[in-house]
View 1 (cartoon, rainbow, N blue to C red):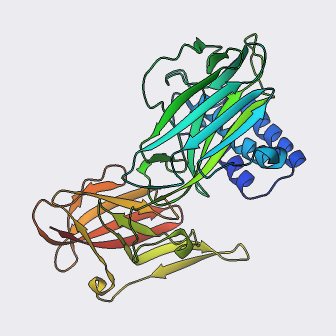
View 2: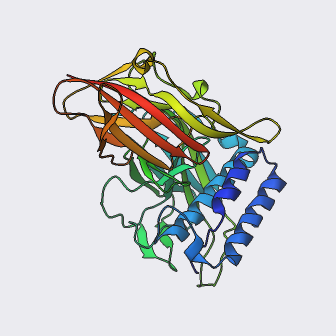
View 3: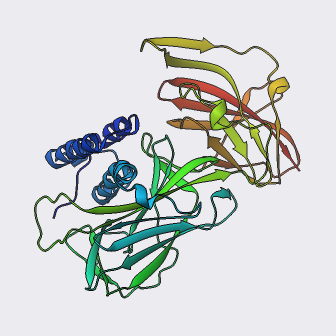
Length: 383
């Protein structure tokens, strides 16, 4: 079978997430997405987050997104049994995903465990959509930040070879065998990074609500075809939360920033987190009637009166946590005592380093968003 194309996939996924679908509507939406995937052959125009492996990830994401709706509608008997695990079953194959806890801090290790059990009295084969240059696994596992187009396919926690993995079957599918009544297990690792589908940036994730899903296909694939549409996909999912590791009274939360047109950012270090102040901005904002209006906010006050000071060690990491909107481009500058730009600060993903010398410093964070620009400000105290 040939890899899947995914032009305009983001638009379809956004529309899927905006509605509660019935079983029939879910099936129709899945068919519409797959039809578009099949017809669209122009890969030069595709913007997705793995340049050479777009096709297989598109397959995983389409199946997971649609599968979430099918899971809720068709499988009430397999709802989450505990806060730490969830399972689903089809044709005698059970797929379980588990986490050690429901809430994680940014500095905690995140490991997910996937188990597949064959409850049949015959050997079974399952297939896993996996890009050709990604390590073979027993299941596809994806983490997503809820209500945002931020995703990542997780790698295995270790490189230990599993005898059940029988290699590739027709391009982007890994073949996995299961003996009678056999259970196999594999652990997956998340480094707290996600990929923004709008800007194609890899960012360090912050606080918020997340979904983790695992997927296998139960179809019997016996030949290579120009196009193949899976009929039996088995999916299990869990929700979990990430926080800063301690209670912070002066940070933005999702509830503080319901308007996605007006960006909110927190600045986070190993032991502290504060809100980033938004100053002058030029934003296009859509009102309730769907009309676009331009807002231009100039700030002339004393900025330092509105700032919470972020405490950080010498040369420590400062992560910018995008609460409700990911910028298309970001620039960070040292400011002098008159709040004039001195020099640009190197930014890796959404993290930069504090100065080496102790003292209090002011930074400007200039963000370009899909609906305008904002001058953010941050005060940092280096110990």
